[in-house]
Length: 115
Image 1 (tube, rainbow, N blue to C red):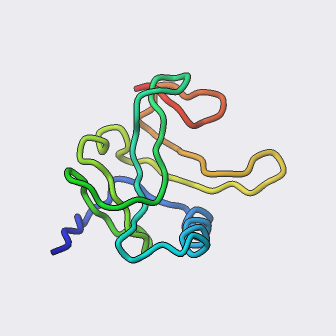
Image 2: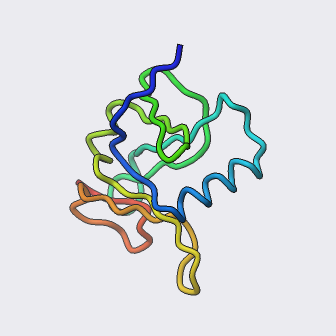
């Protein structure tokens, strides 16, 4: 039985959705995989973002965001509520960016933050 929580705590831009779908197709992942979004200790600002395809684990909440199956540990919602994930493909930067309203400060590379 799948338990999909209705209100997702984060969102993806159109560019992020396109890139995530492309990555999932390239990796030929099965239907049991979803995108894990979370945080972990580390990085130059104290916490780092987690973004990658994974299986659902105990303690995860599941969301459907723009047709993408997303897994997030319940405790991480506190740090990620309201966050928007984007994908930049420009001359100065290429990769996923995290616009997190809960971050008190971020590092220069944008992959770690403090609250």
